[in-house]
Length: 91
Image (cartoon, rainbow, N blue to C red):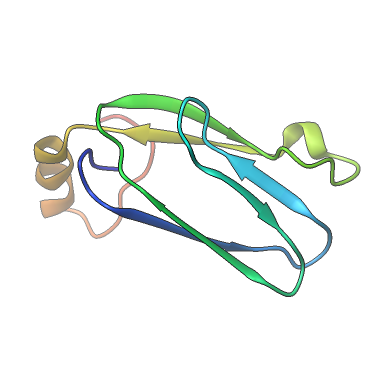
């Protein structure tokens, strides 16, 4: 994700209550089945953060996490210029 850009996360759960947070930020959301959760934020500086599920949701809970990579906006735009979709793998 680029720095200094409004990012909106929208998420839902199809089965049980889940939650996600992005470490070292103010992003913290509980996902309740049947509802769509939405939270917006801006990342001021480049960082790599874990995004674990913070609500015990059953078997496999400990493996429910993602990785958020925030990079400088100019670098992000240069990478995005030639690609339709970016991922967390550094070029």
